[in-house]
Image (tube, rainbow, N blue to C red):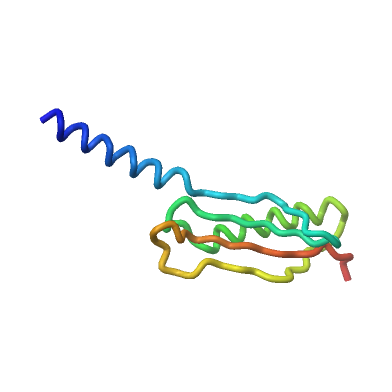
Length: 101
């Protein structure tokens, strides 16, 4: 009886660690020559890619608005499904801050 309770507790603890420890946000990372990168990764496979992209783009626009410039997206890289075994939704956006036209 007590042995079963300990085993269940171990599985619950492992599950909680796997679910809670996987989200990653890079923040704005300078790449030189007025070029930046920002990334977002979900903690589970249940988060939509649209939400992650929107958050990353908001951060990019915030960065460029500091200097009254516009965002020019250079490249986006997205994780491909299926979203299991650590391959959770992830997006990376590389961008430049350019003068508005």
